[in-house]
Amino acid sequence: MSGKRILLILLLIAVGIGLWLLLSSPVPKETSALSRASGLSLFGYDKQGKISWAVHAKTGEVEEGKESRLSDVSLRFLSSGVDDVEARCDTLLYSGDEAKLSGKVTLSEKGGMCLVTESADWDTKAHEISASDVTITLQSGSLTAQEFRYRTDERRAIMSGGVQARIDGASLITVDGDKAEAYEDMFSINGNVHVHVRDESYTADRVEYSSKDDVTTLSGGMVGTFEHGAITADVLAINKDEISASGGVHISLRNGFFRGADDT
Image (cartoon, rainbow, N blue to C red; front, side, top):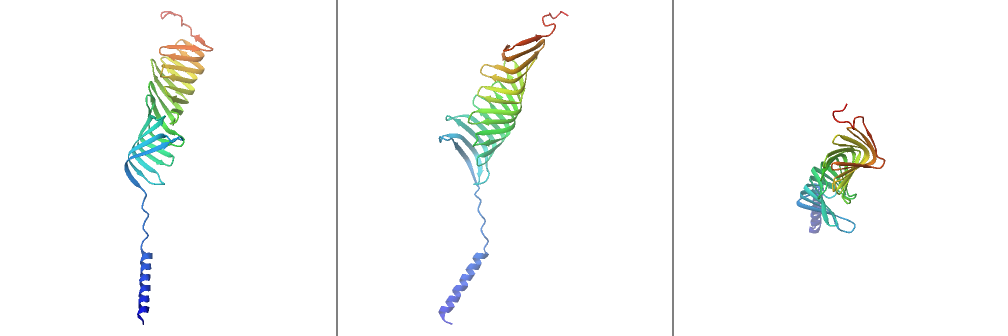
């Protein structure tokens, strides 16, 4: 057998062994795209290219194409370059345009309302944060509601599913109703409104409260009862220790209203 033929046979054997080793070797597993980091910051932009929100987290786990997790989170929502709305939470989970805030969630406006809840959903595309079973504190009172939505672009809170309010003005006022809205220094409650102040009770379609001038205004089918009678009117305003009515006012007094304490 010639030397060339022996060399060719050895070469073929070497190639066969190489192919066998290659085919029998295990396929390496795909490495995870998960990355862990500290001091993370995320930003959202409006149509004009200006920053509309910013998220800062002490630590985070980010994985491309999957839900990412941030811890010890603070958020800022900017309007005209001013971060007048802030939020905080223990954990933020996000994927695409959707995010979930959980653990000691707070949302506060500078000089305005402050929301406290355990979890909230944030739709960055719709500019809306929603939550259930919330308590909202205001400059002069508080509200609780079953359902809550906050428009981050309008700075407007919308509550539904039953609302209870407490107004800590010159006189304590409590209000129950179906739904409510809060904007800047005022809020309104609509639908099946019941108001209690001192020993008086009122029902109406709508109540508005302004913390700027400490005035509570009832309107729409307003009916009130007090110790010695009842009142109906289009509008009734509770201003500190004064109550005034206007529009179709009718007052009915019970017997004995004009009698002295010793009269029978």
